[in-house]
Image 1 (cartoon, rainbow, N blue to C red):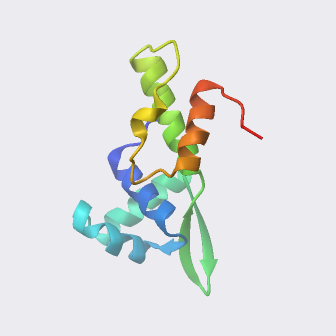
Image 2: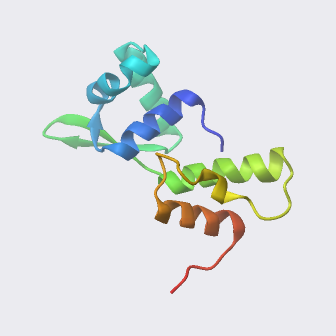
Length: 122
């Protein structure tokens, strides 16, 4: 599943810090997105329906957390891009993602295992 940019922005904010209320997310994303608070809430509602985020209550306040991991979401998107769109039959060059500010070395290794079927080293 390829996420629209709007949903990816929300996921990135939640991967960085969670849980967050709709207001906290809105404040974190406002400079990049220019959204109204109602837009942030609408995007969160759509993402809950897709099971991308989960909602819980903390002291009567609704807060949101990612329901899918960074590696799961990005790996699924990359697999779709490389296998279905670009029709790459062999290994996916995960090394091209080295230096990403979004992914650490462990996440890159997990992506490599996910995309290329490599076993985890003991």
